[in-house]
Image (cartoon, rainbow, N blue to C red):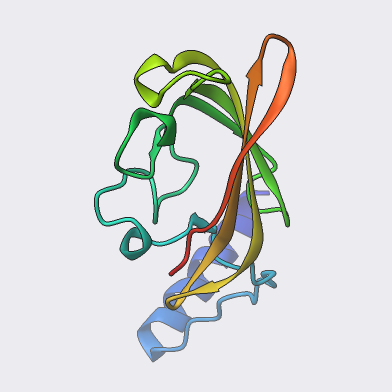
Length: 142
């Protein structure tokens, strides 16, 4: 065992002094870059766009476009789903009367967005009184 260590040290020293160093090849699978959520340019006054798994997404404008405490699953798959909180205006109520409810976001259409791998569409569903109420589905790339 000691003989093997000494022999290895002599071979390494000889290779180093001759300038030849052998490095074993390691095969690595090329992974695509981690996608981001849309593009910052799509919503200049927004939050969360152009980032990975944002905790807050805000379209800008009124509170019905703000989603907080988001937890994402399936990030990097063709679709990723987030659960969190949002503000929903009940039927017959103005936006000012919006109430905080659970929200489900589905990011989809994974592809190129301004030179970045990104989810290019976002669908919003509000959960109001145990019923899913569809919100907007938006292009979040351009």
